[in-house]
Structures are given as structure tokens and as C-alpha cells.
Length: 115
Image (cartoon, rainbow, N blue to C red; front, side, top):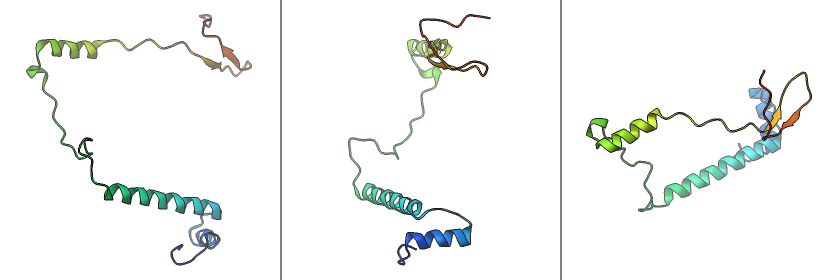
């Protein structure tokens, strides 16, 4: 509609009447500008030749070696990584929410009493 010379206000009016979408002309302006910027960036990316140093998105995916083909020390290190325990949670900071009490900052040095 913009290419046909319609104003953003007219486009907003058409959207409200035909599609039931209520929006402001400024929202349509921002939408059109964003899509135009994305189109320019896409066109520039397609026109630019791919760099030889950076692997492309169409690089060939290599299938990882099976554990049977790996050296023993590598297989052991992989097994150790898979079996390790997750790290302990860091102490909580920020607000402690209890709907019956006001918000309070939690002192990282103090711990909440165990109940």
C-alpha cells in the first residue's frame, strides 16, 4: 500500500475496517521501516561473497566418532564428564518473596533459617 502511495493513516484505517486490527499509524511506520531494514541487510548479505576464513552455514556436518573408535583416555574423560554432578547452586541474591511479609533484600552472607 505504501508503494501505491497510501499514507500510514490510510493503511491503519483499511486494517481496522477489513481486518479488525486497530493500530496507530506510527506502529505501521515502525513495522514498514523494520521490514525495509531487514530486506536491505538480507540483500547486502546475499551480494557479499562468502569469506574464505569463516566457515559457512552450509558446512558439512561431520559425524562424531563412536566411543569404540576413541583412544581409551579420551573415552574415560568423556565418561567422567557425563557422570559428573551438576555444580551447586550459587547463593540466592535479590528479593525473598513471601506474600504475608514485605519484600526484603537477602544478605548473601546470611542463610535463611531451616524450618
